[in-house]
Image (cartoon, rainbow, N blue to C red; front, top):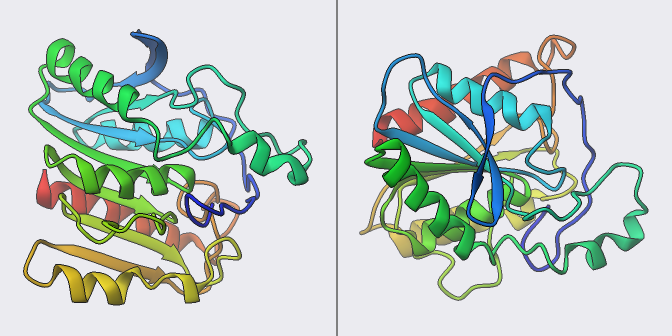
Length: 246
C-alpha cells in the first residue's frame, strides 16, 4: 500500500503456518488479538494489520515477538468485521474494496483500544507498529496522538495531509529499496521531515537494500537465506526504537 490516497496491491508473500500465543477479546464493537509478556508490564504496542487483516498469522507472529520482548501487544480488527483482502480477489476491484477501510479513519477504534489498554491492562506507555496499510495508519496516528510514545511505520506513509510532517511522536519509517508498491521516488518523507522537524523530535527513515515490499513480516527468514540478515536487522531496529522511546 503506497499511501492513503492511491494504495497499490501487494502480494501476501510467505504466509506463515503459525498458531499464535495470545487470545481474541471483544473491545466495544470490534475484536482484537491480545498477547501478554511472561512478566507484568505497563507498556503496550498497538500492532496495525496490513490489507490481509488482523488474523493473518504473520502479523500475529510479530505481535508475539513484541510480547516476548516485554510488551503487551494488541492487534485490533481495524476493518471492524469487514472481510480483509485476499490474494484470490480481482485486483481491479481493490480500490472499491478499500473505500470503507481507510487507514486514516480509525480514530473511534483507536480511542477504544487506548481506553481498553489503560483501564483493563493498566498500561501507562503506548506505542504503535504498523505494516503496509497499517504503516499508513501508524504515520497518521503519529500526527494526532501525542500520548503515543513511539511509532514504527513499516512500508507505509501518509501523503495527502498538509500536516503529514508534523509528527507528535518519535517515528521510525522502514522501507524496502525494491518496493514496487512504494518506489523510492515516493519516499520524499525523509527530506521533508529533515526540513520540517529539525527543531522537533527524533525520527528516522531507513531503506533496506535489495528488499521488496512486505519483507519485515511477510517474508520468512528460514526460507529466504539471502534476505535473512535484512529481515532480522529491520526487526531489531523496530525493537530498539520502541525500547528507546517507551
